[in-house]
Image 1 (spheres, rainbow, N blue to C red):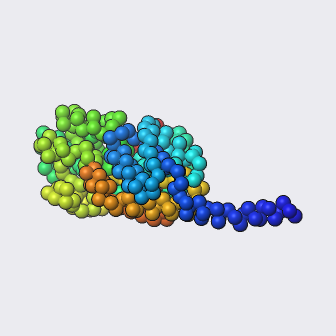
Image 2 (image 1 turned 180 degrees about the vertical axis):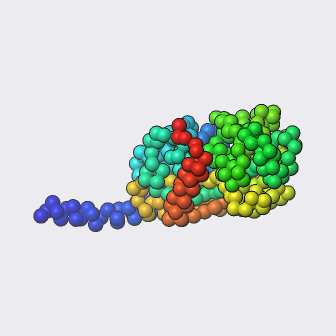
Length: 319
């Protein structure tokens, strides 16, 4: 009987301890792990958020870069971390929506190994072509591709760029040749040099090249036009229903107490609404898009399933 009473007491105390822990959270430094290198868009956002959270809490917030294996190394590290809220994962659709469908062996489960904290920001992609291709609109590109099936090459150095282009082909009935790259910047360099013909890629990589006249912008993957590029139409204006983009979100390890997750969510909301963080997001072509943990969970599942459908329809085999 005493043993049973002890177990019952512990069970009753556990939720109370979680609440007390959340009230005192954070009581020590937080580490934000990211799966990309210093200087990337995610790195810039993470460091801006870390600075604001540090100001609010009075605790150090460390950004740890664990690049490699398409973010899988970082994902695995956080999935196995202590579920106390002090090690969190700022990541993108690559680790949570693309990797499960593109990689044969994954040392983490994006749906089971993490507690969604918040959606932070979304970014559209830009369809650009080499000016020498001689097309000035989505309609002209589609017409050229249909006249020359399988002859146009597209480069991609990220899952977003690849899957966005595969979706474009599926919706237009066109066929391009895929040229893989380790990252988007070298792919853009080859596009400018005429080694490839088109890309659908992030604005941070392409806008400076468009402004310099080295690339021609045909359309945005966002639902509508952007103030950053008011003269560029949305792809959906000529291809109804086309919408695609990338996103940044924050996750904690699974089993992190709900009160701690809620406290992290509040810290993210406060940080993302500061002028400093908004400016960093906008400079990368992103818009702040905040959510609750439950909303992020639903969004994550929908994105996971959507990316899976597109990848399967494209016939892309996991590597």
